[in-house]
Image 1 (cartoon, each protein chain N blue to C red):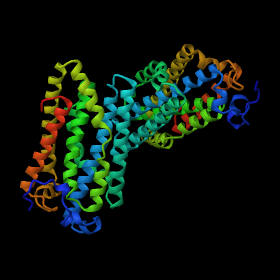
Image 2: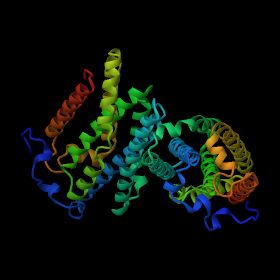
Image 3: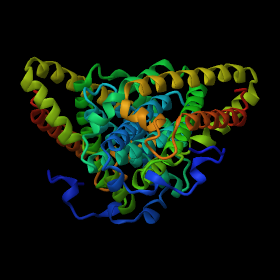
Image 4: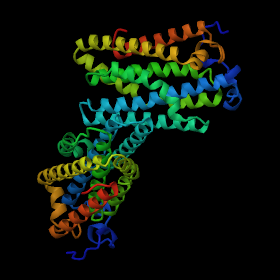
Length: 244
Length: 244
């Protein structure tokens, strides 16, 4: 059990994190958990592609539209890598993704942005939280899966683009800040509620997350992980000029 | 003046088609026409990206959705190449694209597919006609512009995917064929009406197309070009199992 506050990512890998996929996947429960994780991430990337392409329609200028289309295209290429990885380990990608479609579609349906700025905040906040979560989990995965997950979480350029545009909008009209702060809280609430739904539904995945199957991942550590993710969220809200 | 029925693409380049960009662009009217052409094509690719991403939502399965997302992403990369080319020749890409936004947006607004099959027929028919047109024009352009235009018209996989799915749907329910044949005629009508709007608005472009500015492109040849495009459309409709 890990009791310090050192982020998991800074430690030398031990346990499963020191193994490659072939070794780690000999355990069928670990294998099932990773297939779940890759399926959830793959569907998430495909849904992100759709959402960004949709939000591109709200763009006020052609440059902004092209910028969102570029991000959407980058998400699609991430999806391709995850799908190819699932196929390479002998899993049917669609079967791996489908258990997560309802939760992710539900999240996006509940949080359809009503304008360009809400879309930007959602892209920034939503992807940052997802990215933080997957990075935390990645540190506990076998080396091959970890490398893939970290590669597809590479920033697709959302951050600086969104921060710049949202800050400018708040400077031009400070009332915008209050509305967007509420919006960001709603996003966080919906994300948590859908995440709970996934954890309740997927045994292998939740066993890995809270059952100590992967290295050093017990319930206390999950609590600390959520603290770190929430702190990072608060910092990002400040960067946008919003109260968290 | 060209009087045979040999497709332009099979001839040895003469006139402007034998020149590179730097030589041909010394004529300001030719330069303006090519900037128009690249701007129209770039906006067309960006609009195609949006439309395919939108149609991906209508996909009946996750595999179909991923297939459309892949095409959308390919269109986006074509857009990037055209935008970069405009910038490389010292033009502001947005300024070059904007004159064509209204006509292309109008086309897509008037022809929003109401279901998955209509979306597939539109992707196939619309892109094929646009592609035929640009290929005909490309044969008359300077060598550098021609190479770029032909590269971005590379099939993004629409054809075989759409033909396979539409044929299967018509086999399963022949009544679908009648509805989709009407739909394809509407698409053709809208495309021609928006094309006329563009030609009426853009002097440099229409002078190149019908004024004989580019090599061998007089009014009679434009007539033959439209015959070839219409014949190709009829053949494609048969391939789909539809009466044109």
